[in-house]
Image (spheres, rainbow, N blue to C red):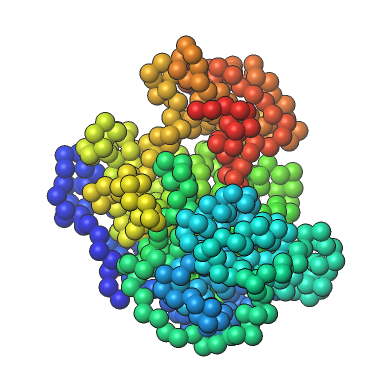
Length: 578
């Protein structure tokens, strides 16, 4: 295997570029002793990851889904069987296979089977409405869609079967992936949730696929150019588009994460997987990274805090990636003190900024100091930076991963590289950066410039190489010409002991242009008023940053499907247009 092509530290250095006098990148001084920024990042087709794991760890448990387990050998055989069946259905290079799936064994099997057959995975959110599904299907040209026999997905797909590009809809029985006796009870207890496959020429079942199980024909893949995954995102402009992640992109990011999260032991350690695999964070960290390490994925169909407590108590997982809202929910639960979290080696917080107070509260309540904030984007497969285990800097998203370059560019001209400590747009170079947005050259050209991914985030790098995100450029609030960053206001509100969740946003204002509003949900058993919060933040914010209005809600604030607080959905709920 060869090392991925990437600009090196010997490239021309502009004034203020964050390097040290010896030519090294500034963050290298803060790297853990056992991690090297120049470590080789291998290039290979993505399904090799599973093939290697099967060869090395065949007898070990790969998946534990609600008590039913599969060894690496069993998982590998199932993937090969399905890959052969998909090839009989026309899957080859360039053919798109959509996965409209909650976390199940089918998520893993069809993901790797599609790659092995030569196709491209298109991940879909099961909570999408028909219009959203149709838009993504037509944009990607999805040829085959795979889902489970739940009304949540089947009823919507039944209305979309006439989309011309769709050749097959494969419906798998959710209950078949459960252990005995849950597999028998599920269709009875959840009768209203189960849907019968519609009668249509395009519809097939899991049984049909297994009847066509066959050894797959080897397919030649160009890792640098063949797309492994089309991962849809709002990106930096808010319009959903498919980030074309090549085999090399995702494979590289898995290995960058392997270098960073050291100490994983095959056959001993396990991963608690509550994040949905259709999300890029879970795809890379929970599924691919875990399998690449020969570990066990304790997979759950969704986040359930009581199930998490049971798994912590019984299974003692070592790794637990989650979004801040999940860590916040755990820290604020009345029963958190009843459980021993000492099993956790590393908890990556991603998907949204981790408020300092949420991190502090989680550590206090669980006694675990394994939580580390990271940062990524769909366009970067997704991990860009992460704090080292045990060497967190509060408020920082950490250090760039091996072979990853983070630069801060002036927002005025988009070209000048700023020195440490100065605010600008965070830009990224590295082997994990996407090929571009699928069939969208103009949108691609807006974010990929001069070899850099322009993230749309405002941030800075400190003198030790740690990166900080202040806020999204698009979420910036401009009050009378002055910049206000929502995260700064949110951090101040989170310092109040009664605040469990908060979202800050700009609201149109005729006099000020925009004004700062905040929405707060108190922790269980706590009460707080707008006046109390206004007084609390007065000495923590400047007058421009101080909220003009704070709305205290009894109900949880809106969240995305991966559990992170959603400013966009809150503004829609409030009828606020920006």
